[in-house]
Amino acid sequence: MKTEATVEYLPRFAACRDIGHEWKYFEWRGYHRTLLCFNCDAKRIDTMDHHGKITNRRYIYPSGYHYRRTPKVIRELRLQLRKEARKLDRWVGSDLHIVKKRA
Image 1 (tube, rainbow, N blue to C red):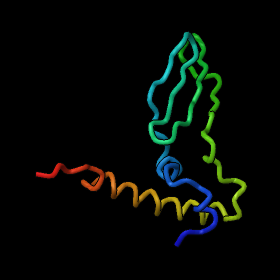
Image 2 (cartoon, helix red, strand yellow):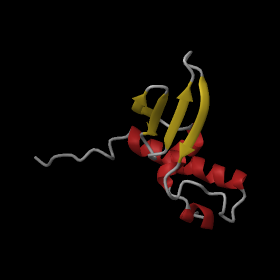
Image 3 (tube, rainbow, N blue to C red):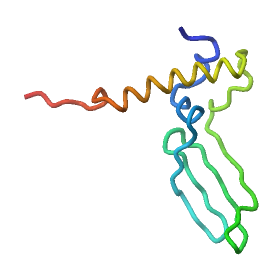
Image 4 (cartoon, rainbow, N blue to C red):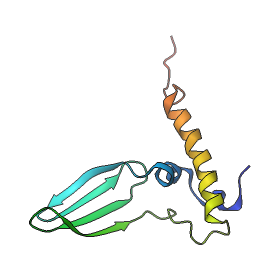
């Protein structure tokens, strides 16, 4: 059953909301590094001191990622998103995403 909140919230963000982002290095310049989420294209920008300690961190999220303005209570929405993420996990964990060649 889809609620108004999940209709507004894109399923591709469900896994990131449930288990966290899958960060990959995107760019590293001096004391600044940018990481990009493989799933949702969110960016994380870290600033470090000369010892390598992170002194500042900010995030840039893609359009549609935030759900704060939805009418659904956050706890209920997260439960629904976990269900959506579970569906995605089953799809990726199976061979349903593999296009089979015809003989």
